[in-house]
Length: 196
Image: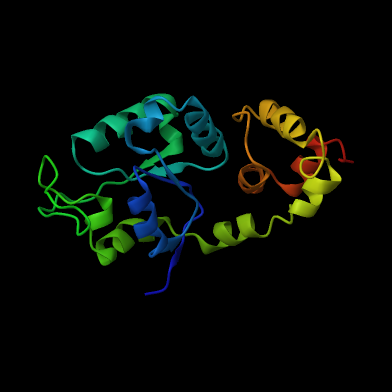
């Protein structure tokens, strides 16, 4: 099966869920680090910012923990900016775990690839995905604009992040990846003072 091209950011609970989805689709996939999302205000701020540009997909496990995480995200992001996707409740145990989960159901990482593919397929939009990839913003721009490679680069990145209501302390790679998703190239140029 060909990988799906999903333009929406997909939110999952953990790194194994993320790795599972990367086998099925090309997309930006962010983990909540389980209940870590309750403590990491910067990650929630990033998810909110990404949701302003395009709706986000929430795909958590169908257990109690997944429901709590989903409820937390749902309370923080406008309803019209969330695509709620659900995995079926399938009894079983993930291969890497020695015991069944508390509820005895498979999480995202344990669900069959074809089932996940079918769940995500309606949200494939190759044109929108390619459009995001076509943003020419690059590390060369970051060097030119003092966002990397200079003494004040970290402070300059924090200024840009603050202007966009993003978390401070982002690495150049993280900020670049985020700006490519939430800004057009012209919007970026205006943001750094190189606009027309």
